[in-house]
Length: 254
Image (cartoon, rainbow, N blue to C red; front, side, top):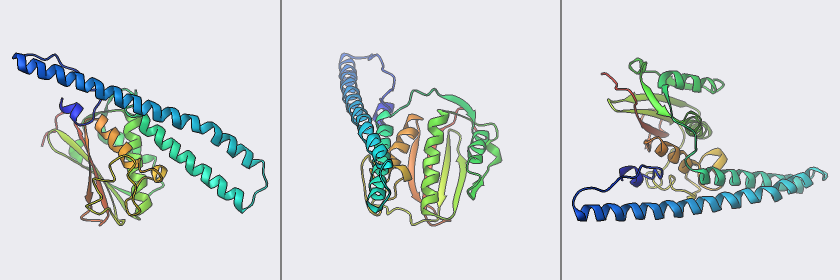
């Protein structure tokens, strides 16, 4: 029940046991859970179908524009089509929800270092705690990489300094991404995590800025890993601090 309450739709069912009243309450919960899952599946499927169908006319329009002489009007139309394609990609990403990718055990320090090698062209400061050398996480590598890439892209867009650090206790690992940008007002922090929320002041991810899905998609990926995403203020850099908290697969000794 806890997983379902946190938005993890593919949480395991249970067999109600105990007193009659408890069994009835359990069965009622399972029926409600089933109805909610069907409604969400129907909604996301419809969104995916609409977004997919829109791609064909947009592609046709783009090809027609390529055959026309370039001028100020055609350049503007091409930019509009590009924006619409980015919006559609965001809708599809949101509609996909939890991917079918399988969880894998990874040594988190090795995985993070390999991941950051792809960002070697960017000056990112990485704080590497040696006590995490043998710590494993269970992650969906591609999905988790996408979530962190989104957050790093966001930090780069709004700041000139980016720092990534790891912190842990006996049961959870925190990946903290900070920047020296303008940050997000406290009143807006819970709002920007909601799907389709848009604000002139609120920061959204590059490829989702037009529809307000960037941070919502990232949070869904983190939820799929039984984790939490927190938006905070960076005490050292002055901008936004995003903390991704994930359960560890191996016990951390302190």
